[in-house]
Image (tube, rainbow, N blue to C red; front, side, top):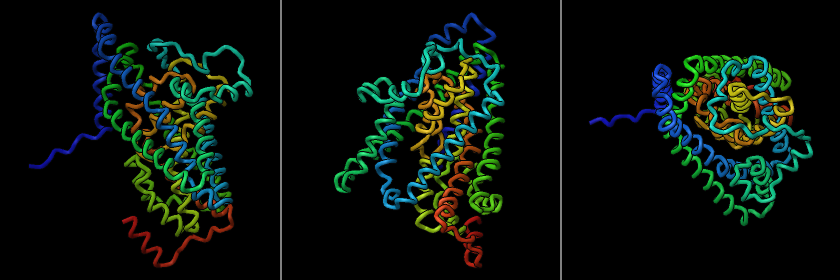
Length: 429
């Protein structure tokens, strides 16, 4: 007897989305039953998903950030190259975040979708504060008086600040002293990823509940902004790849479209699977043949999978702005500048696996005091946007070692020997 293959999470999420739309349409036509179903079944199912997402953010982000800093021994040992890599990663991901905010402000993907009446509690974050916030007050507010209290209250910026300090201090200890604690933090990180997977198994039910509530309250017109968001995401990814990464490649003396041809099979695999980690070994080998020395490719590309996610950074900005617009929250330039700082931190330590964008978005929205309910609205169709976002992550990490090698004056012409061509063709076959 052939064992039945389990239904994938993406399929179950899509089923939950479609079922939620159908139930929402039915309840929208029968308002006398709508109130009871929303209050007793649908809203609690959705709220449980939101609480589960909030529950995993703080320990996961703290562990990932600590391991990412304290465990980057290869970056420290390489000194100058490691510092240049860090500068490049933070610069390019910051540009991606700003680019996403610019696209979101220009095209307004969430405009016209007023979900504010569905909020169970009023927004209490940066968008609703009336008092003037200067830079000094913001920075002082980030430093926690009590890290345990900050964790319990979900003050993610304070947790990130402490994680950075803790990781830096841990990295300065002798190897025999820091190794056990890094192993413990790595164990916590791996365990939290398992917890995340367990939570994601519940996500179809949570998405079903929240989408049903949205459609029951606002009708099918509530889904139109999602179609707009998908189109704008594809446009933003294409523009960033050509305009920003294309310019970076030109400055580094790399043929951008030639690079695209060289890694086309990796881009296609990442796009179709929405998992960038599957192509890491091929990417390291191809970039070495392309002219970057092995010491640089073997350090920059693996680190890039945690610290140089251009697509994830871009969508974190675009998705956050979409949610703010959809809930009728007006973000000033000062608020958006604060969002850049938040997202630069929350986007670090992400893993190249499907669905981690939910964690980044939840962390960003929690830090900014924006409605976390918006994550469930995006989650139903996120797979369609995760594909181009993942491909952009791969493209950014392919370009990174070439830029660092050029910066170091070590970039060689691409290997065009018959052996290399044969190896390349066999890989793509």
